Amino acid sequence: MLIFIKLGFRNVFRNKRRSLLTACAIGVSICALIITDGFMEGMIQNMVKTATSGLLGHGQIHHSSYIKNPEVEFVIKNPKNIESKILNESVIQSWSRRVYSLGMISSPRNAINTSLVGIDLRAEKKTTDIINYLTKGSFLPSENSVVIGRELEKKLGVQVGSKVVLTTTEAKTGELRQDVFRVSGVISFGSKKTDSSIVFVQIGKLQTLLSLGNNYHELVLNLGDPFQIDDQNNPFWKRLSFDNNKARSWATISPGLGAVVDMSALSISIISVIMGILMGLIIVNALFMAIFERLFEFGVVRALGTKNKHLMLTMLTESTTLGALSALFGIVLALIFGGLLAYYGIDYGGIEFNNVTFREPIYFIFKTHQWIVYPLAGVLFTTIVGIYPAIFTIRLNINRALKKTL
Amino acid sequence: MNKKVFEVKNICKDFGESRDTTVHALKNVNLVIQKGEFTALVGPSGSGKSTLLNIMSGLDLPTSGEVYLNDRHINTMASNELSDFRRDHIGFIFQSYNLIPVLTVKENIEYIMVLQNISAKERHERVGEILKTIGLEGKENRLPTQLSGGQQQRVAVARAIVAKPDIILADEPTANLDSKTGGALLEMMMGLNEEFNKTFVFSTHDQKIMDKAKRLITLEDGKIKSDEVLT
Image 1 (cartoon, rainbow over the protein chains, first blue to last red):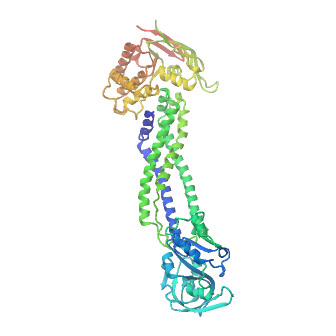
Image 2 (spheres, helix red, strand yellow):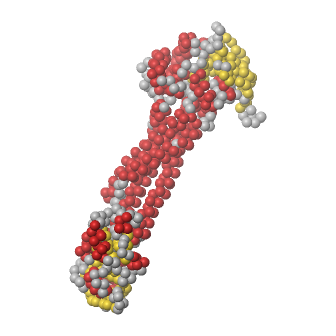
């Protein structure tokens, strides 16, 4: 058997230029798959990290009714129980309370509906990066300070230091409550929608305005790695869902973002199929050229008594060797390009996609599976595709092959 | 008494699909080849020499008639059976050497023995012996491209006889060789014929082979015109 494997292996190097060009073409396809995968991974990580480092966090806990109908009265039930439970979860690195309310912000020029967000600045700093989104001023230095979105700043015609009035309704009575605040800072998340409506105030101040006492609407969690427990079916989320409160991962809270992750897997599959078809055509073409070139030789080896299985083994060794060379070439090429992309990245800064604005370049992310799955799939695929030319040689008429005709 | 190796009975071979275009390449050819014969099939181009060789070897099927090798009717054999039979009983020498260029001299000669499932030890011994016989000792690890045309054709002969076939069919084996090299190859094949009683059937235009042949069969227009045993 070894002689047929040797024959198939050495046949690859008979026409070095053709084999090299074929290996290059297939290698480029494998490289493209690896690069696409790594870049998609980079894009997803960038998107998810950007989204989860902002208001979204890695997970959130709310009163179940608040999720369906975000009314002020639906505060987290038995918050002390939840907080003590959180302390037992080692995966939670930090957490922060938030209060939300709809309201109105008024300046001498304009009055605009807003989303008021009460935050615990010290805990928030440990849990999210929202402070890094501040573009002007400082982040809530005093009880009567607010941080407003950049679009809001323009619409209200205010600047850092200006006075504004916040109006909201009390949770229990529904009575209007208002207070005067000073703009301490301007923030921008890159999303026009968010920047046109968001107003941050200190949590205690908003709790007072809403007469919520120490109650709050949201617990935002920092799990270190957003992909660690992003599956909602993980028992972790069940453990934190009790007393009519529900804990959810970022992927569940922001299904659009989760869908992008799923979509990228689908995109890779589609690209893989297209590349697979291309690789198949390339390898079949190369093998058929080799067959036509060696037609007489096939006649000779058949005349000598070479059996179908031996021809099949020779041809499949040839296609597998070609596939392996291509995979090697693809890996080297992907290492070069992937390395460059991992170092320099591609700058999509400021571009918004699915309500997430990329803040830093997208880098190629190295993952073990990229260097195993795609090259191996390439080799396996070229081997399988090699069956067709192998069957062709098996069916060759010996006499015609010896006359070099089909 | 000589043993009959090959028998060809009433062989006809037609080419072409319609009655108007049909070419009768062989017409009622009858032939018996005895063991140890050194036979040359001669005749002008298109006389049917190569067609007859192809049919004798089972590479092509006759339109009618029967071919027997060692009293086995080869035309009725299934493809795989015929392939095995050919491997074990017929040696081929082609016009343009047709060694496998990526295999060494040793591997080219071994190839057919691998197909016969002969052990590595025996293969090694037989390759050593045959290389000595054809005068290519020490060249076993060379690739065919590193040999001259004559040397390559010697290896082709070695490949043909190493499997110990009953008959060796050679299609113009000296056609691509110069006169001196062709002569040397012919001497070698004659030696094999005389020393080991190997049966050779050539199709040839080479006068040297015709002169040395023990039997000369002349074909013309698909028929045997003459069949002479020479002394």
